[in-house]
Image (tube, rainbow, N blue to C red; front, side, top):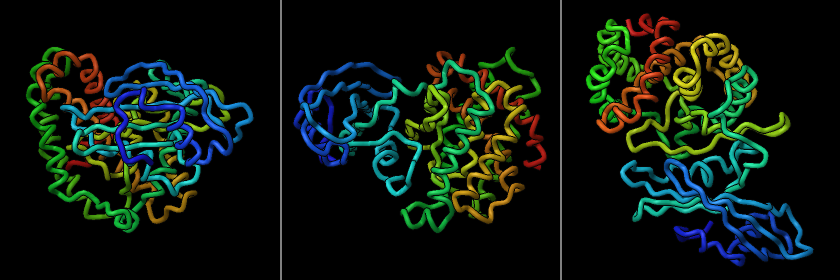
Length: 358
């Protein structure tokens, strides 16, 4: 990896790319001769598709295209998590469901970073415009379980200098979200069942204590992705390629170590239509549980997973509430958070989460 920040695509010269690809072992002989750029953007980053042409006779994998992501933390406050995700946290994991990273650097001083990685646009798609299926859900469950098993449990986390959240971290997480509750209810008047207000206040009163209680038992905790929305899941255009999980960008207040099943509750509870979640959630969770076991996780019962899933499903309510902390987001993003609130409350009732909070 380099020791300097890429802030402009023209810093990526043919010579520099030759060195990077050679160091990664995908360019064995020869060199990069020509480079062309195709620039685009995303919500939180500048993206550049890089087209490569090699010297005749070059050998190796020789990727034809790469993707450069340049991200400024700005007011969102993204730290080094995404750089670590691609370049550090899963280096020892074979067949990790991540695009190969060739170079990455985070500048703490500038609060920005770059990542140079494989471009999968010719073979994969995100899932914004697709309807979930059971096959899709189980493929994601298998990919998630592979990542989770690698960092599973208190001892493994400790080896990486990571700890299960303490009450102070849980309170910090919730302290960002709580201020959005009353404004959310005010904005949602007429759009939700009036009885939800008392239920939601009760959830915010009781659920945090259950989170604190849960960290007293270490089973089930791992390094999580935290944002498995449809855009962060890359599915193959044909069925013979792996699913990739991308864009781990937690906020400063996010829980980055938590119950592994939270990644699946996040995926299904407030992004999937309720009838699809009801139809497939238990089959997908079974696949996740079986996949954890196949990757060496033991001592985590199905009953505990079900409890943890319900505990984490309630956090989807927090996702909707967090959108309402800032007035601008509350109004501009109502088209996102109001459906998320409806979907999350449907899960709350379906799963009898009130019994968990008793």
